[in-house]
Length: 231
Image (tube, rainbow, N blue to C red):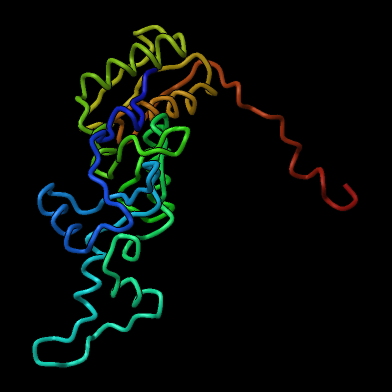
């Protein structure tokens, strides 16, 4: 089974800023490149932080309104310093949460979810920037056609991995949802088949009504009266 990784979906040409890039320059980079965040890199092109639209809009949020009323949002000392910053070094969120090009799509998704970020700069072994991956990039796997998903399930999962005959299991795929029906030689293969199908790129869910020939999951259970007092 072949799986796409971060290298396959990342953007390689990355717009960046340096620590001394001004607020206005950053706003211009966002506008000209139709992006919402950029990595801040050092002289070695290693990411040291991220600046997003949210970091820039913080400056607007703390300004008085046109009528002269005080800003409605209270900021602690750290956030106020960032709101008043004039360059990327002061505006950025640091340290940068990064990914590796060889990471799987689920690995990158877990990192985004864990750190509550929308994009990850991608770095090489030396920590230098080689790309950037966003939530939208990771979702590309779900654009895969149902026919391609079905072919991989039938050929790679059921055929080459589980060594099942084509007539054993019927596979249907609609909108990325895989449905398995049929009979497996052993009951213990059912959760294995489900797990392998879920790992196929583009699969949204797996439904199954599989039967089995041999129940190899039975474990002898002691009689329920065995532990009665005096028994």
